[in-house]
Image 1 (cartoon, rainbow, N blue to C red):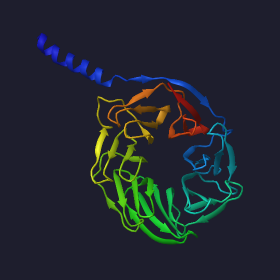
Image 2: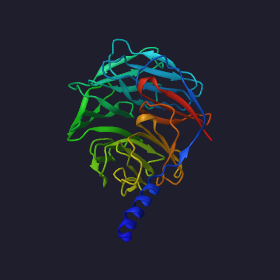
Image 3: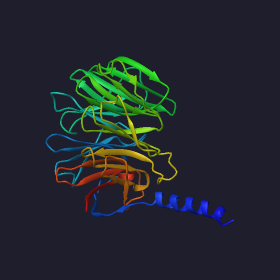
Image 4: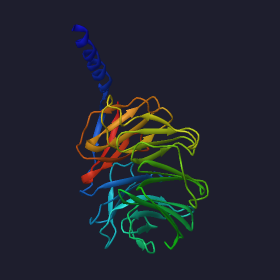
Length: 324
């Protein structure tokens, strides 16, 4: 009888040990007043240190936020007569133009950091454009997230004239290009790669999650996080992948991930729902949670030039973080 009790007891002890969380603490958490409840979607720091955030949601006022002081303060710029969210951010090679993807097939651009905006609608498209990339001065590649079962990849010229469109039976969430030819797309249960500027795409050997965000050190070393808590990595440009964290593993804490960023091959961060920020120092195999400072979902984490981190998400949430 005692042996029958011993087995489940040992299993329980092992389960609790494997589920134990390593709790990390911030040295400083600074909330940044954005003056709005707009959803903070994506962030980009330009080469001169200027920070750009795309913001808004469906039926919300489209706006961007701009910072010129390491992300300590942000100025809001509204896009006139545009009740949609801005999501993906891209720069146009050889120019100072910023381009944002939006809902209902809209592409918004500014050449003076939000002083004025130009809105264009991709011809014949009413979809939610989740990410965008200019691979040349007159070539744009975009992806869409239409429904739970549908997405697309498309190409346009610089005037948003549709050149190519291909439908897929899964939504696509994030995209990253390395030069004009090589790019990756992450979506629901799929990661795809192009080596010809987006003309053709092929599926990579990846399954197992709704992949939301891509972080890369270069075209070979790439990490991708999934909504259900999976983290995958390639070190050879997508030829092979390693599942570093299995979101379906019942012995691990349950995460819903939205964003990821790796500083180098060993040190990385991921963010997600209910204020989750977690950290790895072994390339992504083992993750440790930070103590939480908000209940809002967080969608991005990025480094500032002063060495601190910045995260943003729902309800105008924007924080600078200093790690101990």
